[in-house]
Image (cartoon, rainbow, N blue to C red):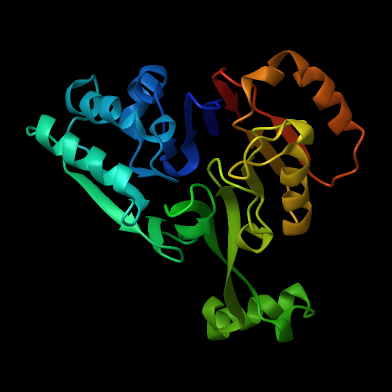
Length: 281
């Protein structure tokens, strides 16, 4: 399973990204729903400090200490630097869980910071970017980026046989260059993202608390139209997942899904039903 997602606006939001064993946000129910999959998580990236995005950390940390799994596997939790709500939770957990069997590390992040999550032929890292949510309180979104190789411009039109000869003579690194490819982008439940921050991503998770623009109550959240516009301008390549949808729209989701099918967008749009655990390949 590539993605496991739960999001119910105001109540709880979290996402498990299986390819790199990452969790984005950690709302209530994360550990009880994932069960032993909690032991697979290596990194947790928090978008901000509201309770519906961090309350599940207490359960996750304790389950990792005493559940049926590798209780010695380290866990690293990343959060927006100086976010006072997260700092309060860190202090509480430090006071109440003094005997962990594994190494728990808290790492503050700022926009532009990178965290390596895979080292190999095509290394991957998570890069933080700024989002807008609560005034005066830092919030972050995250891109999962893979470093790929391609032929340098001067070699791209050569026959395959010639390219193979150059590789044998000079080595692959001499005729190729690296470039970053965004595989996955997550923006938390913020105001509309800056499309430049997620430009060219394959998969975008963008919130849309309000499916009808006229229902919008706060500029701290987004509408469906805004999420679609961000995805268009960013040039999303594969799919847009719309999450953090208000529960008021649950009975109306089929109507919105039919409307989206009639649009020529160039990418798939998935509405994540509020209050339901969803699994996506």
